[in-house]
Figure 1 (cartoon, each protein chain N blue to C red):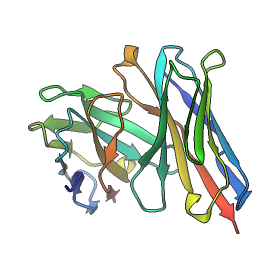
Figure 2: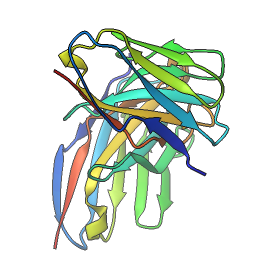
Figure 3: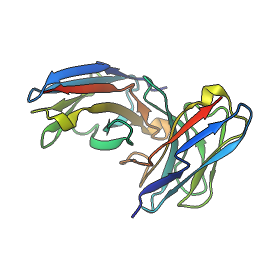
Length: 113
Length: 112
């Protein structure tokens, strides 16, 4: 079955700098890769997603890149702000597993003032 | 619109007790899910319902049962609670299985 590994588990960056979180997946049939943000004590919320027919997707300060050959995808946040502090989760799903989402363990992003 | 509403928000059970977590969505979504979230482990899928009338096991179904009561409601039942089921439970829904999932506010369950 699918396995998703996420690194690093904690990332501390200076406000205004960029942050990059990486995930690897094992099932080559995976074709949907969302990223969720979870603020402390809140519910997860989708921030961006990408499908396997696309290599990169951007939404303002957030971008996701996908390398299908290497089976990894990354979240890039530029010009980080205090409100970016949260736990970020990657996930992957494939049609051969009925599109069940398999989640990474999460990255706690800390923005230092 | 309320989105996804789950009840209760907090619950303490004694080992062996049973309970049902309720979830309802008002977005006319086809798919609904129950996840548990434990520290350092991300979210793990317990059961899901791809569409009204169907339910399937996820990664960690043991000790749980579900009912898709209608298109809006999807309940999770713990028949005999165990301390290992202490967790935060999230219900979620999406239009289709591989589209954006919207989560409820979570239920913090403690089994003593």
